[in-house]
Image 1 (cartoon, rainbow, N blue to C red):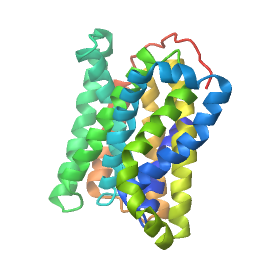
Image 2: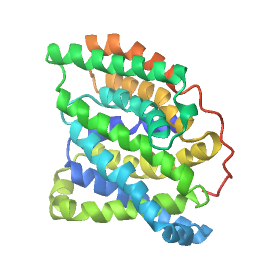
Image 3: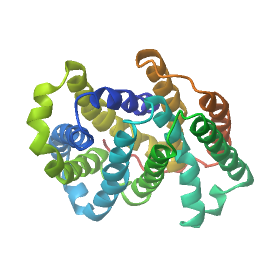
Image 4: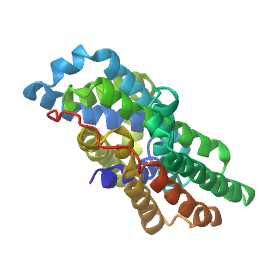
Length: 288
């Protein structure tokens, strides 16, 4: 279920970009998410703990949303939604590296996971190299999505280690409120004009991004982190990639490039190896 929710944003970002700017899309989806989750967190007792843990909540919001959502949305002006979803599949590679290098979790970097990382990155290099040579993709926008993937790999570790006793609705609601405030000055001056000229499909895309792909998806994702740990939780990118590619190819007529056809199997196999070694972590369940 989580993989389905996280595979949808790339398709709806592409639809939203038909009418809205990048700052407006990020502002709108976080504002809508906060609008739903903060009242719920207040009613269920999750708001106060999130505010008390504000340094880590702010850190989570900056690393998970402020940077990545801008980078992915801006990149999708130039690359396909399916490719964006595929590149985000590198998240488990970075998660393993962060655990092993910065948090000294040597078990994370086993021979199997290291082999998976090498194969996976080889797949990315093959994909980007072939399609760049053929003029199908600009490496700059690929790099933007890869940087977003780095943020996505770090944020779940923060959530697992520093926010595991804080109700997820409070963490996510406060994070999204903060992100919407950051983006408001860049969005509000042009929001009315963009709304007036926006298509119905773009407006609905923004609504789905805010309520389903942000608010609901994060609640489910936090439950997954608590259940299986931060690295295995990022393995939803298996489903994520399949959903993003399917929607892009079927509904947006995005092409299956030579680089994609060659690189995708390598990335998938690398993901399988890199994410298959983390043991289940017994993290207390907290209310969402």
